[in-house]
Image (tube, rainbow over all chains, first blue to last red; front, side, top):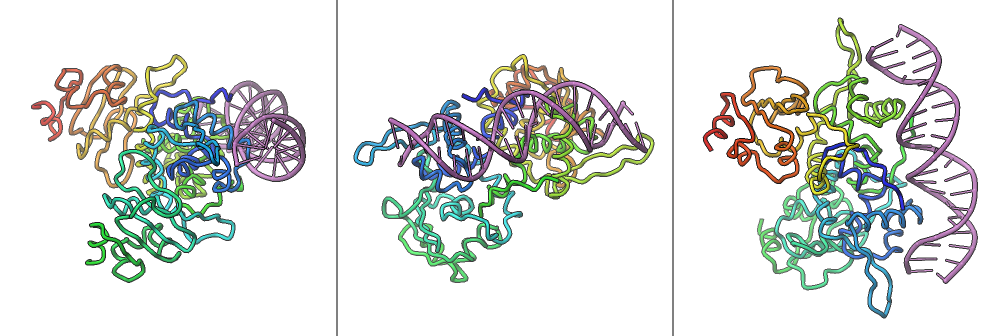
Length: 208
Length: 208
DNA sequence: CGGCATCCGTGACGATACTG
DNA sequence: CAGTATCGTCACGGATGCCG
């Protein structure tokens, strides 16, 4: 029970930082935008966070209405953490941060961790209204729910249904897109993204 | 000289948080969006920040290219801190945080500090392309440079030139607008904002 | 007086070990 | 698997002092 350390300022940005300004909190939100995750999954995809800090953040976030904790039905009964609708509305904050941070991204440092679904945020911006998209990278597979009103914004692994488009690209292409140096249509034109699928976006991208 | 504590993740949002995720940093940016400020002014408008933390953040921000330090010409020679163009590009981050934080703003608590120019952020969103606007509240006067390509985004005190519009409103009206419960045109219609000035926006708002 | 640097007490953080 | 317990370290907040 952390007696929250507030900025005590009557300013909505300061209030937001009272809730999500602590170290790791926004990165936990980024992870949970991929849908329900177990404690161990979160811990694995947030290298460097200590177990007690992760547990403490998840408690604070639940208390503040950002997340809920739910027990999965057996078999494999376990707790999963999930964003509430209010927590999901932090997506624009992460997008704004991500867009600003593109300038700092640079080359991958030897100490940098990478997860495939971290590339979901920069791709979301580029694919308005594309529906369900599956993306295959060297690092792994993830999928995007673009234009979804509620539920997860993206997810790890294969798409849970037939996607409107499938992308295959290599790491270099994906980082160029993430850094804003290359647009998705340009990458397709240059043959650096292989597009398949029957959705409108897949067809439009192949024709361009 | 703080050897930065990085998340070490190849993700642009995490990189952004490496630079602006420390406590107080984004609130210092919010202050500097009002233009060049002296150390003492910053300390006065950020109640609760300790002197060494403020000095340390300003050093880090200068090292990271967010701010520059400049000596004012005499008389009154003093150092002022100022955002670089890169630092000013954090405005969308603060706007996204502010929009999300509206839900948490609620009533003003007795412990909450208030500054007039903290209301600039929510107003910016509502007044696209309005030019130079002066706003008079019970708490003080500030002005907005809406649509400006560079330089400060808002400022304390009177507008430095003849503004395109002048607003006068009371605290209740301004908090209602800040919380998103009342739009500026509606507030004008209800007589809760007194609009003067010769700019296009001033005329449009008076006629509506 | 503005712009810090220093010192100190408290709390947050990170790593590891341990438990139901 | 999902945390709790423990501990050393560092960051933070408050006060005070120094120096141009």
